[in-house]
Structures are given as structure tokens and as C-alpha cells.
Image (cartoon, rainbow, N blue to C red; front, side):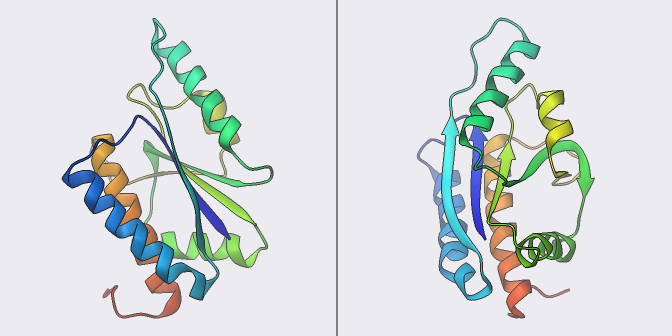
Amino acid sequence: MRISLFAVGRLKAGPEKELASRYIDRFAKAGPAVGLELAKQIEIAESRAANAETRKREEAAGLEKSLPEGAVLILLDERGKSLDSEAFAELIGRYRDGGKRDMMLAIGGADGLDPELRSRADAVLNLGSMTWPHQLVRILIAEQLYRAVTILAGHPYHRA
């Protein structure tokens, strides 16, 4: 299954980008052994619209344009469901084993996610009940993707 990461906002050069890239690289190298591959990383600029609802709609339209047909859509949102690492790996494995070809993990903009996009998503997850800056969310989800691969492979990286 091909996994893509979508984010509103650009990750600038620096330690955050380097750390996110390190985990993405680990995922890309280890994933094929368990039937997962990195398809692409997509960044779009934050909308400059005058109000939050319009910004969310414009950003959602950017995501929809990038979404492969029939792809599983997982949104990252502070109001989403919390999963532990093993449950996250199981979720990915279930979609992979169910024959899904593509999955998109999406990080919305500073105003959050468009309600229509939320209702269309296959899952809405959070990375804890605290609010995280987008730069850290990129690092956290990149690490969790790598961790999911190691869990699915039975590798000792993840110790419960």
C-alpha cells in the first residue's frame, strides 16, 4: 500500500525538517518488507482567505486534488480518536490487508479541518489531547509510521 503525507504549510529547513526526514527515510527503507511504501509528501501553502471557514474549504480543496482515487483518508486532528502505536499499526495493516492501494495521512492548517472533509474521512485521529505545532506533528506522524512498520514486521524497535 502506498502511503502519502499531506500537510497544509511548509516545513522550513532546520532541525524539525531533518528529524521528520530521518523517520520518513527509515519508513521508506523498512516499509516495502511489510507491503508499505512512501508514495509522496505534499505540502500546500496556507490559505490567505479572510475568514477561517473559507481557509478550511480552500485547504480541503487542495487535499482533495492530491488524493488518489479510492484512497483511505486519515485526518490528524486534536478532536480525533486517540490510538496507541500498536492500534495505529493494526489500522494500517487492516487497510493494507483489505486490498487498499493508497492511504493519505493529512495534517490540516492552523484553523483546523473542513467539516465536509472530516465527514468524508475514513478515520480522524489525534496524537494526544494537547495541541501540537504542525512542525512537531510532522515529526510525530513520521516516527509513528516507522514504528508501525516495525510493529508489523515484529522488529524490536517498539517495546510495549
